[in-house]
Length: 64
Image (cartoon, rainbow, N blue to C red; front, side):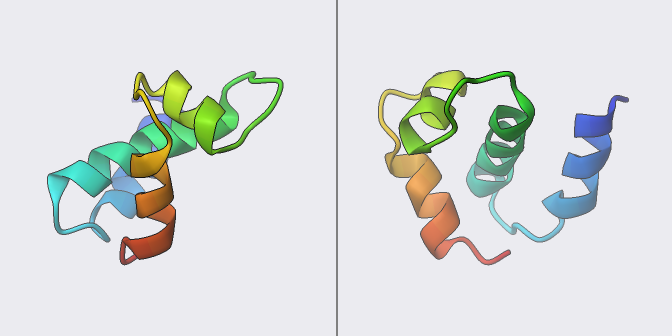
């Protein structure tokens, strides 16, 4: 298991639903990726999503 997996394992218990748990992993993955800019759009694109809505919802409403 890599560092990202260990971080995800450490924080995943904070999310009761699987969707925010998976999105949190993609969010952290995007933060450590070699992206030139890191904002809602670029992190969502890195995760394969079509809009930043899910990432924004994670940051705004998920109970961390």
